[in-house]
Image 1 (spheres, one colour):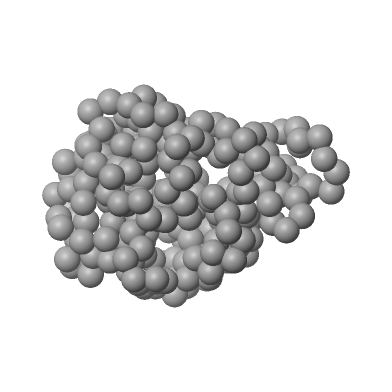
Image 2 (tube, rainbow, N blue to C red):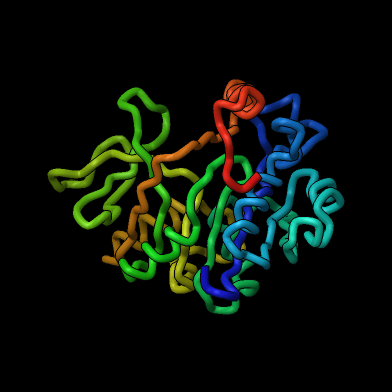
Length: 246
């Protein structure tokens, strides 16, 4: 990873699907194998040479800030972007945009366990000369996750149940990790709630911008439900899954 690359970890969500666990504890601080969930994201970033991170906060954000502090115990410098009114994934990134100082940056969800090689992602992004590179993975036919339609040369061409009007597209799925060029921010609205996909990626694709997909085949778990949280706990405790950055 090039020196100076920064990252954002999205942690402002309400965690509604995990209630009542998230009534008094933010989802980012729920324990998975005795570690707060967000710690996995921070350790992944630190392993790949990231030194500065911004975290957006809303629901019980003071607890997250108190737990993580300035980030020094993770080998990081952590900044915080407070959202008095929750802004969603796209709005949260837009609000924190000054932190990136006009440079390309990483964004990842705090509720995802993944062991992606961020240096390889960075190389892929530069090689493809893309506005944005979304980390994607294979999608089972019966999956509830929204299809990401990928065409030739790993180019993402759309999202949703129905593919764009092109043949030969593969339905993959989004992992919650991406590398963004600062010009991507131009597609996101300011000071209102927005989704990275609906108000960011899709308008960029419609405008003819190149959005690349980086295919990832390792361990991944989106811990948005109690079932998935328990599965991750079992995966790690049993030793079936070993994350390279722990």
